[in-house]
Image (cartoon, rainbow, N blue to C red):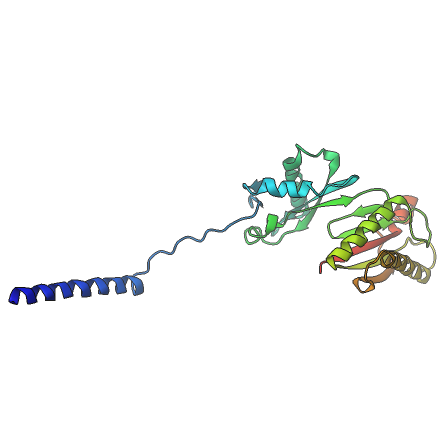
Length: 257
């Protein structure tokens, strides 16, 4: 009887010891945490260089980009620059991205730009590490960027440009705005010929003509704002015909919904 009692006491001791050890491990001993695995997107950049790094998700993303190609369009590749870097480093990254499309596109099929991407390390989890791709219109009349477009006037006129180039662009813009619900600001600009007040009115008239054209194509008027900067924001020298042509323009800025 004494042996049975001793055995029971011993077993009870073992159970208590086991329970105490597990309690100690879970509340006192700080076990190392499992490392956090950060999942990156199809493409990131080496922060120490301009080199893009892709993973096994990239081929699908590449095909999605290429599938948006339309006749007459060019692929705009926007490279990010980070931290204390400058625009030239963003353009260098955009040029490095060109090689990813070399098998499908020629150099003439691609154009490049740069944008500030913030902090390099913290934005690695952002989609494509702040790189952007868009099929854009680029011709003598329409210069489309990632989130804005410039439409040039060939002549010093207050009439809307209705040639094939601008007509095709505005048809496409109208469809995109109706589908997305995005808003736009249309800003009219002029060259410096004429009085300042007249040019301000002329810039606003141009902006309103484009606004009315989009409304006629079915865009909700509440999605469109207009303004005029007249001759106050030249982008080229008004002393030359080429400079005046560059300054006669309407700028369209898109705000995502």
